[in-house]
Each structure stands twice: as C-alpha cells, then as structure tokens.
Amino acid sequence: FTIGLCNDPLACIRKAKATVDRKKHSLEALFTFSIAEIVMKLFGTKVASALSHRINSHTTMCFSNLVGPLEEIGFYGHPLAFLAPSSYGQPHALMINFQSYANKMTIVVSVDEDTIPDPHQLCDDIAEFLQLVKDAVISQGLVEDVGLIPGTGSDAKLDEDMGTI
Image (tube, rainbow, N blue to C red; front, side, top):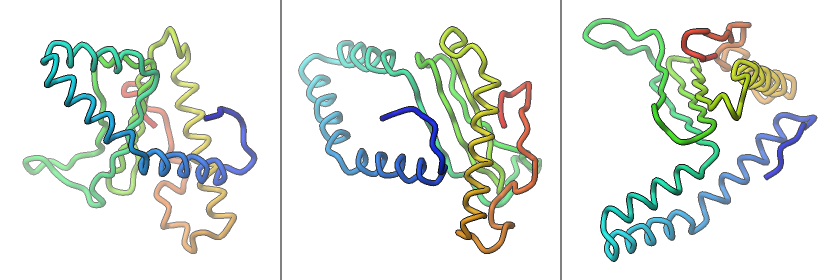
C-alpha cells in the first residue's frame, strides 16, 4: 500500500479495488474468526475481550461505506434530510464513514487532532478527489448522462457543525 499522487484518479480507484478484492478473497477473515473462537474457548471472555481491544487500539484507520436507500424515507411522518453514521470512543486516529442516501453522499470524518491537526483540509481533499473522479468518469465517456452521477453541481460543501461534506 503506497500513498502518493496519481495522474489518473480512476487508475487509483482500480488499484484500490484490486487490493480490496484480493483482501476479500483471502483467508484472513476465516483465520481471524477461527483464532478468535479458539481464544474464546480456551481463555474465556476476559482474554478475548482484552485481545480484541488491543487489536482495535492498534489500528490506525477505520473506513465504512454504507449504501443507503435510494428514495427519501421518513420517521413517524417526518422526512429525513440526511443520514450521518458515526461512532464514539473508537481508538482510531482516523475514521471515515461514507453514507449514500437519496442520491446524496454524506461523509463523516472523525479524527484524533493530535494525529491529523486540520480535519477540514482532509474533508476538502476528499471532496476534491471525488470531484476529480467524477470529472474523469464524464470525460472518458463512462456515463452517457451527467444526471446519473448524483451531485453533479457544486453542492459539495462542508457542514461546520457535523464535519460532513
């Protein structure tokens, strides 16, 4: 895994997708589950819990990509404007949650400010990269209608209260 600039944003996405697919098809998840099950049976819940906490606290980044409903939904007759998933108390320096809802995308960034001193710059960089990807998709003719891409206008803005794009 390398961090660097790329000239073609779609090439970066293809490379990341290949890495994700390779990880999904590996036996890592099966082995992790099997080892966790063995630790639980042999040593009990206290040791399994301590091991789980140690593993999570030594993880630098957490990434979540949730597909939401395509149509607007309501809660007791009140329409939901947006969904913004998050969690509290995680031991990660960086947590990024992407949530799609009714052709809109909400990005929630949770950071440790000692590690990432300017989270707003990170949000701006994410928004800029997504704009570059959208422009590359349109310019390469991978979609026929610009309306197929949600948010094709300049509606990506940073909500100061929520820290979302």
